[in-house]
Structures are given as C-alpha cells and as structure tokens.
Image 1: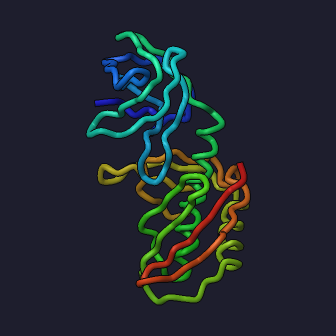
Image 2: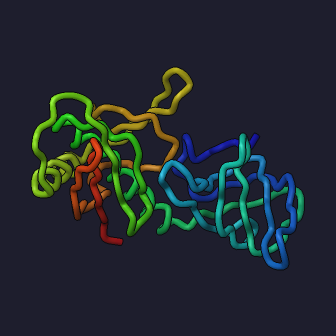
Length: 210
C-alpha cells in the first residue's frame, strides 16, 4: 500500500523508493512507489505533476490501496527523489479550498454540498436540500465566500471514525482527502459564475485566477 504523505505533509520534495516500473506502450510507464507526495486524480481534484528522479511524472491515479504514477521514462527499482510541481499544486489547492468555502456558504441557504469538480475551468459544486430553503443569488454567494476568504483562518486537519477531516479556524469540517491552502486568504478572489436549480439540486459554477 502506497503511503500517502500528502495527507499530513505540505512538503513538495521527499525521498522514497520505486517498487515497480512497468512499460505502458513506447513512452509511458506505470510506477508504484513505497510512499508518495503526489496527489492522485480524484475527489474532484486533478492529479499533481512533477518528477521522479528527474523523470516526468505525468499523472497519478488511485488504484485500490496503491497510487499509480504514470511517467514518460523508465525508472530503476530502488531509491527515488520526488519533486512536486509547486505552482500546479498551489493552484489545485486553491481551487479545492474554494470549493469547500462555497459548500459552507451554501448551507446558510439550506443547501448541503454533495459533490464538486475542482478542476480549473470546470469548477462546480452541487447541492441538495438540507432544510428550509432560502433564495440565493450570485451576488449573495459571492459576498459570502469573499467574507470567508477574508477571515484568513488557518487550516486544521483532524481524524474521526477513520476519516480525514479538513477545515479552517472554527468552520465546519468536511471529510476530504485532497490538498488545501494553509490559510483561507491564500485562495484569492472566488468568482461565482452561475447558480442553477434543477430537479431538486443546486449547481454553482465558480472560477479563480491563476
């Protein structure tokens, strides 16, 4: 089972070991590591990118208990040094964190966030009713999430019933395996693009600047 160091560490470089490297065509290889800092695609968050011993790590995906890394070059079994693309990780973390704040803001209007897409350019949170519903507009939600960003609350990670919980300050925690900013102020301006209610669900589209 791959040790997921990104769960408890914001480090972008680490030493680990290559357990296996299997060709996947002419210029693509499937690599298993003993431990990884690369967040795999999942939970609405895109995969990290970076290098393993200087070889490009193109995409990481979850496969059972393992994180599978796809590279553009072969790697020898044994010691390895990982380097995560810092700019891309920061961008993905901001997008994912923005999704959390939108989910929290939606609860004020009687909606509960049930899923999200935190891929840049496709940001969306889907809600279901969780109580008495109140009208909500793009301007309302924009102001609410801006206020949460401005609070500058520090991230807090805990665990309960085997689940990793993520929040900031005294905000409600969500069970989540993604990467997130250390402080809500790092998210920057969240632009709510569209709010649409259909078939009992509320869909909120959003975006951030790079």
